[in-house]
Amino acid sequence: MSTKSTKGIWKVISASSMGTMIEWYDFYIFGSLAVVISTKFFPSDNPTAAFLSTLATFAAGFVVRPFGALFFGRLGDLIGRKYTFMVTLLLMGGATFLIGCIPSYETIGFMAPLLVLILRLLQGLALGGEYGGAATYVAEHAPVGQRGYWTSWIQTTATVGLFISLMVILATRNILTPEQFDAWGWRVPFWVSIIMVFVSYLIRKNMDESPVFAKAKAEGKTSTNPLKESFGNRYNLKFVLLALFGATMGQGVVWYTGQFYAMNFMKTVMSIDSSQVDTLLGIALILGTPFFILFGWLSDKVGRKYIMMGGMLLAILLYRPIYKSMYETTSVANKTEMVEKTTLVAELKENKKQTMDSIYTTNKEFADGTTLLEVKTVSLENGKAMVVDGKAKVETKTTIKINTADKWALIFLVFIQVLFVTMVYGPIAAFLVEMFPVKIRYTSMSLPYHVGNGIFGGLLPAISTYFVINAKEAGNPEFYLEGLWYPIVIASICFVIGMVYIKNKDKNTHI
Image (cartoon, rainbow, N blue to C red; front, side, top):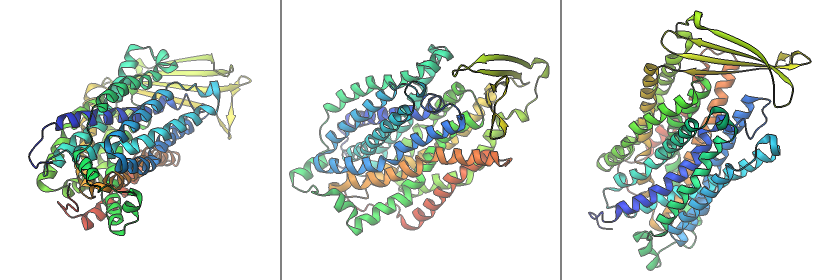
């Protein structure tokens, strides 16, 4: 492509971004609704185990992404970029819609989590083929010297997809009553995706093949065995491993900490009202998204390496202070309770198993406008508290509604984390595309990207939440910070490898 021409590139970016954004929307609906889904598709006897199982199922979709990268990457290098990510779009959309149709655990038992797991695996396979195709397609249309800027538009789609998923969930919650949303309304965001997928399919159907790939194909220069040439060639394999351990591994954990872990942390550890979390996270994402473009553009000027490594280093150094500040900002232990306004209501209620529970509902108000709702459910057996493992079976659910000042403090702290994300993620597509030759680019760049993001990043919510729960049970006063060791250690290893072995502005191949 011409070094200056950008004719038609906005059409390319729009078509690629639309589909990629929808695929991320589909993928993140599950994560955004993890707290609700844990009560629908898993046994309700142990809420903590159910939530961890939901996060593990969410992570399973990430773990299979490298296999999707290999399968669809090979197809993309053999038959073309366009048709491959048409297939991934339809596969993702169909799987998402069907998750919204699966009956609950109470209706079909263990078939519910099994079906969810299968569909999550299909989603992961589809996403594994989508990103590499979209990034490659845009980069192969972009003028030389501007790839960081143009591919950074693709980088915004993951955040935009998450933002739209949060807004759809928020709108559904506001339209329906809490009881309606809990009963069936949580399925609506899954169903809505099929409309967006259809629109994106119509847009993508009219796209042309990448000019660079079309030229290589016309000249007979495409690969007959992309997998062998990508990973069987020691020279190319070296760059695949460098891309993984020197860039995408750290980028993956920074991405998921700044957006997904932050969301789960506020909902489950800080017990903040789910709608408030969705709102403040959405605002932070809106404020942060333009920085993907800024750092992508800047990487064309100063190189990809130092921007990505700078984002990782800031995350490593600042995660613990940021999360400590988040926790202490809304902790009711630091607030003045208005004792005269505290109410406690006790009642007996029949549960879904047609046995009785003793429900204690406590409402508290604090001087700064914060409110706390605590619902303690004591399971009864023959009129007495049921004993499990030597302890009374008690489930406590706390919901805190924060005041405006605390909300904006959290928005700022999440926004800072999103800035780290934009630094590591904005330049990554151009960085990966430039590492590999045209004939094996789709395959070669997709694998390290999806191992770094799918495995190292995708496992983060489950691993970090597990660390927090264990630390809390062990009585660690700063239990809420223990989950951060995982992203800090992974990002630190990646930072060292990247600083030593990646060359700034190094372009190993030409587009």
